[in-house]
Length: 110
Length: 114
Image 1: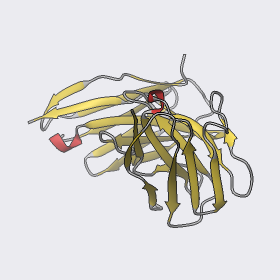
Image 2: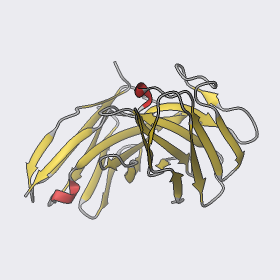
Image 3: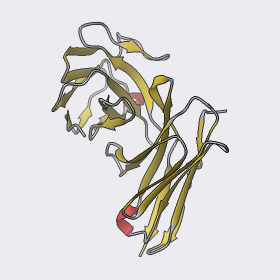
Image 4: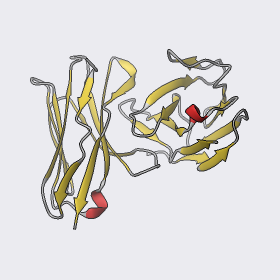
């Protein structure tokens, strides 16, 4: 079992929908959690990071961590075609090297 | 966040040749990393580039194939040696920020080996 599990999708939604992207993890030592957006053939761009449990909001994006269930979520409100990309979750704790999920491909169609 | 510049952004390389990728950061950083991302796959850590000493390689990656230099706290290079089509990937430079709590990536270098 990988330390960070993420469904690769693809997830296809209509423009304006609320998108929910999720990851689970197994290592209790993870304390910091990150979401990256990656467009085709580009480097990952950091969207949000959170520490421990709780919610963090930035514009249309909300990151949520539930350490009791080892569950990480990213919500995108009012999704746009420009949000179409691969979204990677990552976790960090103990080691200085983050563990990445395999990424979820999101397609927002007009 | 720091600005991370990678060169080249993309290249088409002949089998058997070598290519050096450069990574320049606009501020001094302690920890720099090199990742590979093969088509449709997630990120795989190649090595941690250590300033003033040899890089620390992950299992499955060796210095002869992926020599790394880190002459100072803002610059690193990764060479992909004796390339084969299996080396066609995006190669990514990344840094750990000063707080130590998150990782930033460069734009990536997309290599196609023919």
